[in-house]
Image 1 (cartoon, rainbow, N blue to C red):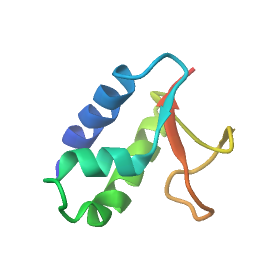
Image 2: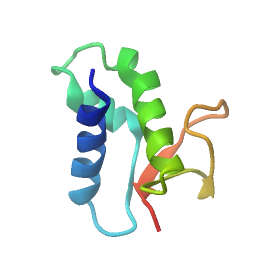
Image 3: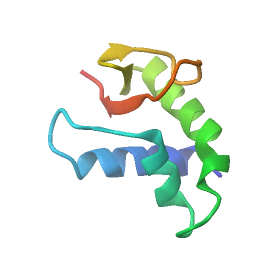
Image 4: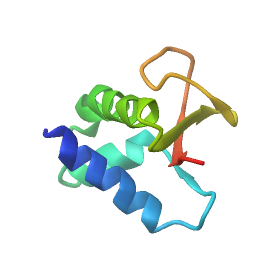
Length: 83
């Protein structure tokens, strides 16, 4: 899937939330595949796009409120608007 498509979906989902709210990368993946489709296969690409956006200071990637690398190990992450 095109990185721009993933990027657009990230920002579309964030725009639908209140200021300060975050989304799970799995929400992005699920929104990009047909219902019941193989969304898990898209997760590495969603995380890569999220990290690129974070590197460009356009997105915040956190775990427990602490900035982290979206592609690193360590558990669930959240995506939010850059501050």
